[in-house]
Image 1 (cartoon, rainbow, N blue to C red):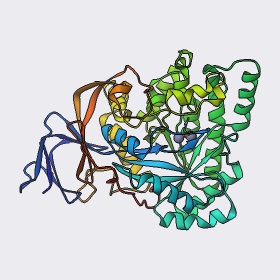
Image 2 (image 1 turned 120 degrees about the horizontal axis):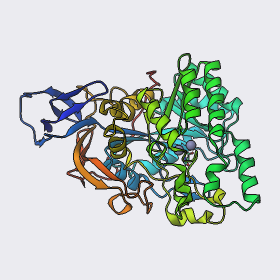
Image 3 (image 1 turned 45 degrees about the vertical axis):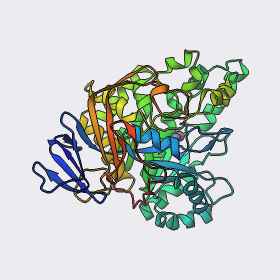
Image 4 (image 1 turned 90 degrees about the vertical axis):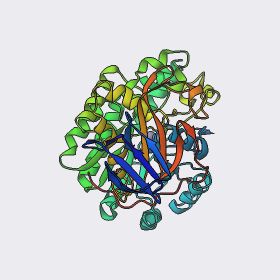
Length: 457
Ligand code: URP
Ligand code: ZN
Ligand code: ZN
């Protein structure tokens, strides 16, 4: 055996079990208390949790966006991921307007294949859906990509898809068994509000949030859900932030195949951040909301109306953000997050009894593995599954501050928060990438995950 992790508590979506776990040739080969045979490496995990590696199903590495390129590429971004207990990330391959889907995936393989420390897959972020591209979908599925994102906003950045295109993709998703993701915000209303604020001289970060109020997100969420129900397609609403959107999702869940994702920052931070001198750091879309919305999202997780937590890791540094110092509409939208997802969820969610530890594993590993067609190779601690394993020490404390983290961004939105519990070891297919909190993995060792069809939960 290559590896034996002894004496830890294995966490699955349903159970917490004291057991050892054996790994050989990249796979989990044994689970039990007296596993026979010798191992090259034996780790004592007494007092620690053993999770299936987290899957961050929402990242933007090395992505051209709003006149700049995100600060983390696949080298720094997957380094962050490894430190954060993430063993697979799914990144958005942004379609250049003049390229087809397969060409887009080739560009993203060029960015990721030589650099990734952990496993990765892609979603196609569709910017220019045509009849010819619809015909290309079966080839995209054969290429191991079974999810497509459409933006209901960003018309100014050329990313917008209209309702008919979303309807069309949802029809196709039913036919072929893939997943349609939407970024749900009402584009024309928010663009009108942005213009109104700027014209009135209201140019600072707080007006980013004011121009994108809850109803802007909830209305678009409702529309996307209605289209999913009408077509019978498979819909996943990314980065949900507020109680009104959550209510829309809850209303539709009983009769349509629909899923919702939220992110750690929407669970823990509020729009007061926009009032600080560093308010630009928190400009992301949709924006941060109120404490009541934070609470509603935790409840949405606990009740399992929401299905996943992912990060929307879209890192920029202050210099990039400062381009919009006199005009919030010019600030590149996004923030880093993949390194802090598990520690924040554990500290703010599990420790504060907002979700259970088993649910945390469900939202960050099991559910994304199923929804995105990777189960049971990923997302569980089953015999025969990839040995994507995290050892997590609930006693290890770390201040979440840029100098302790590994993003090329010079800040974290969680600046100053103390994480009470950190991953100490991250194994990808049995190979250590993080060992005793030291990066030991190899750049380029992460493999592309060829995903199958969407598996309904
Ligand atoms: O502000 C955000 N969310 N930036 C990343 C792009 C997106 O909309 O997901
Ligand atoms: Zn988005
Ligand atoms: Zn995103």
